Image (cartoon, rainbow, N blue to C red):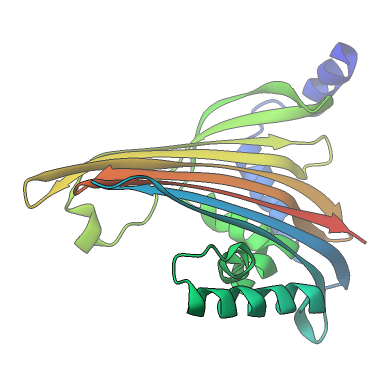
Length: 244
């Protein structure tokens, strides 16, 4: 494995900018050939205020197909029947959990579409990126070029004026063919509004596979946390696409 990493480093020209090379590769990975996958999504959220913690969670499976006619998301009949049963139960007992309905609401079709063709979304994330470090590395045993980045997110002025601290970092592991293997990011912020302090952050990790000239995010995990104004919350999501 060390020899593979060494050969990868020799293949990179002197003075090469790994970020520019990555952007160039992503421009070529915005294909439209048909792709099918099974989606598995799980969701967990805990909120706390002056009362006891409240937890909501659920998981759901769907069949995806993206091609010339657009994106199709097919829910199994059993999934929809279970969601209907949960609604009926909540009408009798409003506090009764509804995990299937929660998970269904949490699957965003726009995010699903981006997962099946993620190059454009990744290009947006990297638009204002700056390289902090670039070195040879491995990702799950595969030789890779690691880019450590500083990101500058675009935040509306109506929100930015309340922020006191904001730190956004990211890492990208790129294979020897120039195709990204994985992307991770972390966001941490602190601020105040009406003399009340708040803070929070987000961590995210994506794993990729190339399908023809598409870049597919086959696994996405994220965690959001926030506290302030007398309450706090934590949310975890995992979405896995199994290519068919």
